[in-house]
Image 1: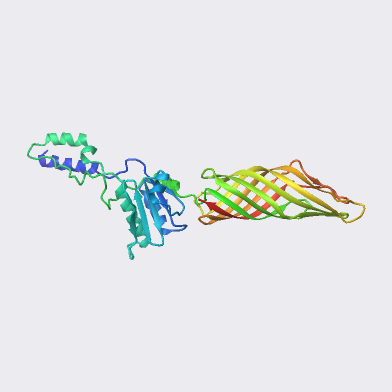
Image 2: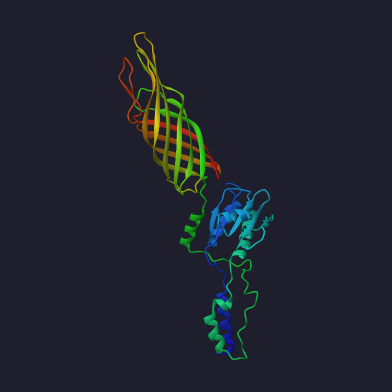
Length: 364
């Protein structure tokens, strides 16, 4: 083999060894301006395609470097919808860089802005290994075999830079890895903590008691991606009634409880469905009103325990607002019984069914 051929082979080996790559998984923080933002959606796709670990944080105007360091992220991007720009910070930069949108960009303004922002960030994050460090074993034999008249071309200082030049095409991950990374990086739409309240209806299926008007309120906190804990309270507004030939009983129900639930749908969807179970303490307030002189009404409070199951379906229609339809069914123990002269006993809480429509405000 001639000296010229050996030199060409060595140069090709050095060029192949100089392809840019991420030395280790990189965590990136992405801050959208709100729901259904096209720039954020395109940024998420491009960042995941690069193999980055993406954490999506609810819209905030906090200091970008401080927010990234608090989340242990090496870089952070914030979409500024009002100014049509993307703010970028990485651990190697002293300040935040802004990438502005350009009207009439190929593929659309949102796509062009997202691609230019990711290209800039990639150039800051991806290290280009030195050709001499990347292939010492391959380069040394080739250099030794060449005569002094045909030295191997030395790698330039620009090629040994620790920053990748822009517009270097990235390697697409394998199909299976890409799908898994996208699923992991897709944000959970629920806020970590939520406070909810709304009207409720307390029913006694199979009983002679009329429906009771009530209000339900409580708090929810996210334990894992799919498991939530919750505390709740049901307070009476309009009492239920039971009638007999000799009078009427007015009944009011108070319930305080706690439960855990699991999500049945993917957390990144705008709608959700949850099922869970819990237990609570209840108090039945009764007030007997006689309609004849030979019967006397009584009033009092009876406590009971209430193990229950619950089910929710809801819609995350805003980054911090959720509309929930809630159903709770429990068994009161020990079973309170309402006794009225002139009719058979009326059992309470076998089962007790509560239906509610709740508005939840999230806290991020």
